[in-house]
Image (cartoon, rainbow, N blue to C red; front, side, top):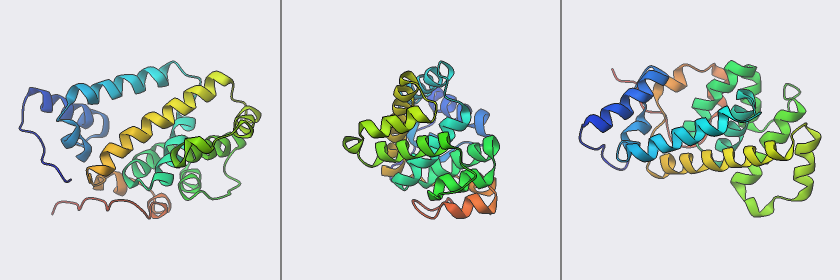
Length: 196
């Protein structure tokens, strides 16, 4: 990463423990976000609030993040959420979303959410009423569409911080993926080397 990690403190220890408890290791991104534990925790709280009070499923969320991250060229979130999508829907679905493949393994809802996430990430000023009609045809109501848009924008902000600061994806994330999903992430920052 392009900046140094902050000095150890009770606040940094709390952030490191949060990622370690969730992932089983201290994520590389925690070393940057530890500069502002309050902001990191605020992001986590807002994401939790959005996710727990939404009809969007874990699969929906993972589809949107994988599509947004691949559009952005963000390897870190693609690897992390590619694993989440693999657990929810299978490796072939995760690889198809990451590579933007027109695959039969994707549902119409998957395709609609992935396309929407890519459009929001690419240029939100190019979205249109027909795009909303596609989401509605896939079974999403207006509240769902609003929540999907907020979720993508939220994840886009998080990814932008990580990518701009040069944070390398964790080797543990890459090694936990199937070869199919790992190979689909052919962009972005290189995965951190495994310590010897």
